[in-house]
Image 1 (cartoon, rainbow, N blue to C red):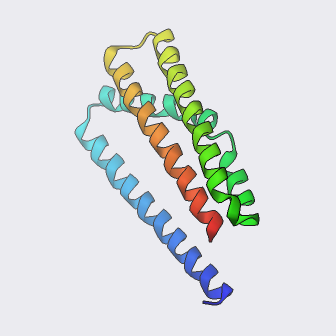
Image 2: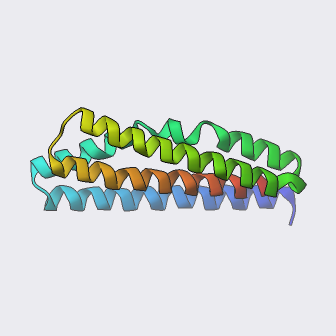
Amino acid sequence: MSTAKRVAKNIFFKFSGEIIIRVLSLLFITYLIRTLSVSEYGRFNYALSFTTMFTFLIDLGVGVILMREVAKNKQDAPKYFGNILILKLISSIITYLLIIFSIHLLSHDKTTIFLTYIFGFWLIGQCLIEFQTAFFIAFE
């Protein structure tokens, strides 16, 4: 397949995926707004926003470095994958502990704290998925 066709195909799939994710997110948020009370939705939104503030601590900008280095030298990909995965796991654990400490320091109700715990795990999962996506993008 020519480079132009491959680039066009990749752009199409990336764009389509983004549209699907945004539509599903809109539907999910609409569902939540209709089913949760105002205070429950406020807790949900607060816990999500609070944990999202810590995203940069897990990512550390290594996704961009991974894409650049693997695209340059594909033979070293397993080495980069392993090293960055270990770095991500360590930073995830530290960030999760920081989230737990911070939410208790702010002394919220038990529901908000529990939601923050759940969103902390979600945040770690999202960052690991983004790491794998960056790895696959580097090969394309």
